[in-house]
Image 1 (cartoon, rainbow, N blue to C red):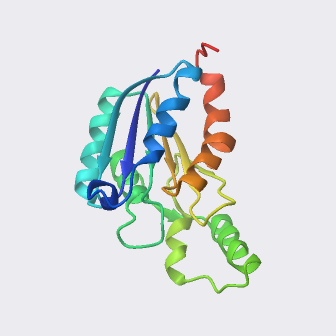
Image 2 (image 1 turned 180 degrees about the horizontal axis):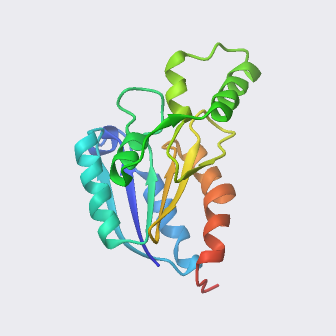
Image 3 (image 1 turned 30 degrees about the vertical axis):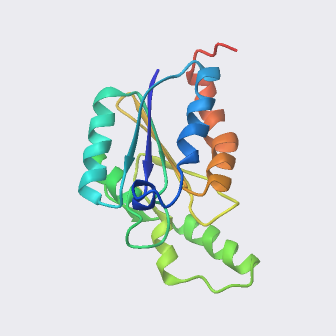
Length: 176
């Protein structure tokens, strides 16, 4: 299986934060027998991210994305994957309920902007994120897998360990 990692966020391109997610994921793939061929960074520009995703789609079986799943206008990962796959985003009521419970548990009012995080496309399955508000995605389509994981390393590593890696295991030729 050929893999590619796409880290998303202008703050990465500007050197404001270090991309520890890509190095973490790169270190995890060999034990699954997955060959990592490319690591890319895309800023918060939808057309550039869609172009990066298209290139990855053409050359990789597995695309692992991190970042861009927040509630703000510049969080564009969901919309970009939807455009790549030509699928319509809809709001999932169950995901809205989970978001509301997340905020309620912390005795906070949920901002309306967080509803965006409950968006999903038909080919995506939501990935649980008990450490934050951004659910991830697992997408399988036309022989490809795309995962969308949150940018904060604490959330991304938890999602990798508990959601993504277990789904990948049966699809891989592990070497150890």
